[in-house]
Image (cartoon, rainbow, N blue to C red; front, side):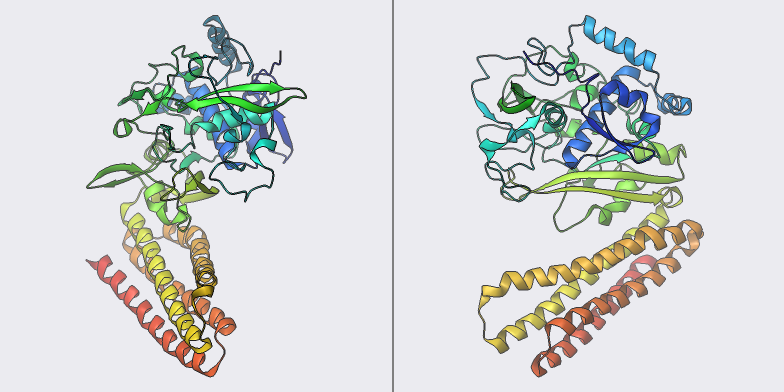
Length: 502
């Protein structure tokens, strides 16, 4: 019989403060967390899944009452390994096993039950980068039946599975957050600080029961397929079992197949407040912020990193208690098809930062939000004018719509380049300047950058046009569209000035 103890055997990929890459077990990771820069996995879902698991593990170890307890832990500079060892002993007295292949309590899995566990499926189900079902082979080129994972990879996959699953036919439910949202974690100078300040305290989670039911590895309750639940606890919800899974080990330390079927079906979305999620609040209610292929997270930065009900809980804590001069986060997500939700389109990972002096100031946040909206409008106008140029080019060449996709891709690439330039400017120059100016100068600051964005937009149009539109008739259309774009950008500036004064 195979064994893999996640406490001691290496499976967590880290980079230490000297840039050295290592694979560690849970105990070594926590003991060295103050000497580790961050987790790093080629698969962003695995990286976040392991981070969330460690965060949940520590929340169960410490049960922090309020932010002051977290501040005390942070001030210690490292995790209390005696406390961690005592927690593990308590778990083991309860019958918990930290072995992936334990017969009675396989870690982060469900014990075999012949009533539910009837189908063995490919291990590809544990890694969305692997081709299977509706997912195209755009990450790698082996077929589903050829896939395998090492024990270490499978352990990481178990951490991520229930955080990024989508609703499918035959009663497969999505995550505790419905469609997989964008997840955010605090980014400190080392893993220790990132984990401490990404935890949720009992006081912050008081609207939801903190530990009843207990965390998944201490919960003996059967995971019944399709069983609907309208509420859960903080600790159980962090790794809520939307799937039943049981690994089958193979010779050579790999896993190719596993038992896999529907897990619980969480339907109480309104009652669940995820500590690592940002929310959109409208007249229709609250919904978690979702990844979008054509809209990068930075464009919602005022919603994500500003003080208020839309931000992750830890962001508000950092701002309110001035725990850091800068609110810096890592972002993780998977974009899914809008109509075929079970189809994954892209895995996302990124970094966002905002000086606390902006995050805590509503006026400055509003001005940042205004100029991002203005940049988005500029991008739309840029796309419209380029599209008109393409339409004229198509008439002249008397071509049909067979190049429509190529045209769309060309326009999108120019818009993406413009927005990337805006992003770099906002997150660096504008933030530094906005943090330093007094509140009553915030509008002047954004006005200056609005002019810069307008010039960048015109430059992107000219650069694209110089390459794409060269004949006499095309040049006339180009000149006309350039004037149209210039006027449209002027209107964007006028509207921003009016809204700011209004």
